[in-house]
Image 1 (tube, rainbow, N blue to C red):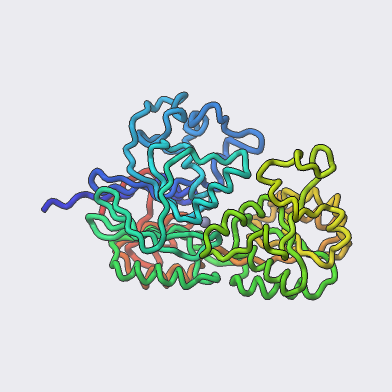
Image 2 (spheres, rainbow, N blue to C red):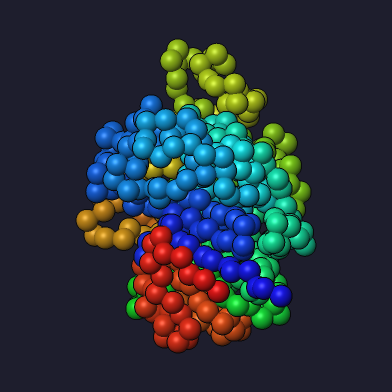
Length: 454
Ligand SMILES: [Zn+2]
């Protein structure tokens, strides 16, 4: 019997964190694994208001080689002002590992005839993001949801999604069964989160499949780690200490899609007889995610521990008509800056950096606390970090850094790979591919756009 050729081509996530775009081919069956946007996308050519023009579709992106020039992948209208002729899709499906934008954002350019396979929770995230952000439009694809245990046949390929723990709910890794054996794709994952059991199950099944290869993320594959290695439990315990030792308001800022972190602060608020105040965007997201019972998140409409903050808009009178339809849903639970100012010691407020101007209305008492529950800045020159600290100093707020990463550290990646024993390693989502060579001599040094056959 003639064995079909299996190929892997990496169009993104190569020597960079994020932007995974992986093409897997088995004979004439072809699937894409993620189609995200890199964090540093186009930063050599675009900055702030100087951004690619929507009207030019893919034109502005292809000008600088920011997306791969592929035929049979992109939507007709996206190609209209480019030199690539439109052809019917040559890709059978896209599989999304999770809803972080560095894994999903560029599906907006794909031909809508290509079906998108995604977790039930991931679909809820994408819908909430499209509803609440004018810049989010994922392109009207047919969505096909999966859960752990499903086996999805795409021509010669069978894809088996298995849940993993990451800093967003509904994250998956995949076992992809091909004519040349199983290929494991980790997506993004961690081994120290509240659902580390999910990752353990994924690693066990990956190991049992005796894989021909692994496509492995390496966000934290670094020579030396200078950041603290907290677990989610530790973040909650340390936040609890901050909150229980003050009579003043506590502000927190976190990644908007990190629902484990939301749950941690929600618990801290509850344990300290405080309410948690969120913006309508978070309330909307929560109200969608409660549809997935397995996520076990509170319903903002029913839960008395959650209050929803409304900013002044247009009339300044908090008139329903001043707000988007999706925002109005929570007006029964509305609190304003005046309420916050009068009830500071009874509250924890979820406050994103881009909403800091609300502090001018709220006027928190000096000496109140601010918990930065995100990654520390990559460089001391980080402008946003400087601006944030200027605001904190201006309002006399005490700064605390408390964060648990969404990714495995170097030791954990090493032990995962040793456990799975793949015949080949393809490192993605990392700036340090050569460090994988220290785990095994079977680690490839992948190049963007080059096809690797198995
Ligand atoms: Zn991620």
